[in-house]
Image (cartoon, rainbow over all chains, first blue to last red; front, side, top):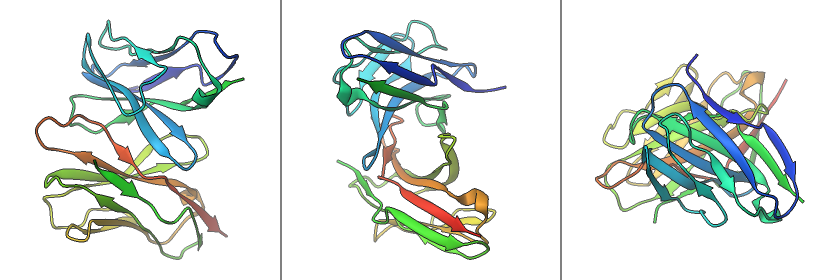
Length: 112
Length: 117
């Protein structure tokens, strides 16, 4: 089944403890991106990747890192999480940059 | 910068009735795409309907249709014969299509739709 898989689905952590949210797609998509969803703000793009080893900042990149070493994987790294990064995170991918986006099922992150 | 505005935080509709969700956007681009996404309690982001700005004809998908007014920069979603399964958060989104654009979607703040039996 073609899908974007995010893990974990729920994560509770403490301030400053490094974490990684994984994202994997099995559709051979070139384009991948991360969004965060906050009440009253909708979804905002954090980072995106046009292809392997090509990443760039979105609208809210502060406090996040990404890497794209393989086509299928695009992990989101929080080196030192803070409570303002408590949010619902979505990974999305598309065949190329202007194809329809496929979303993962989201990761609910709570930082205390 | 492009913006998307959904002015109705919450809406309610009776089952089998019709409801219209509003969306306006601001852009200086001439070529772009507009989308409506549905987010049920499961948190999935489900694409409901897509409209290319260069197409004058309004997109339709079964019970879902849009009223796209390019000059007014308006993109409303009409849900006909509402069903209990339509209850969800609905997001309007914009994506540029001109050279140099990425696949970044710009989302509105969402409209929470309740369907009353």
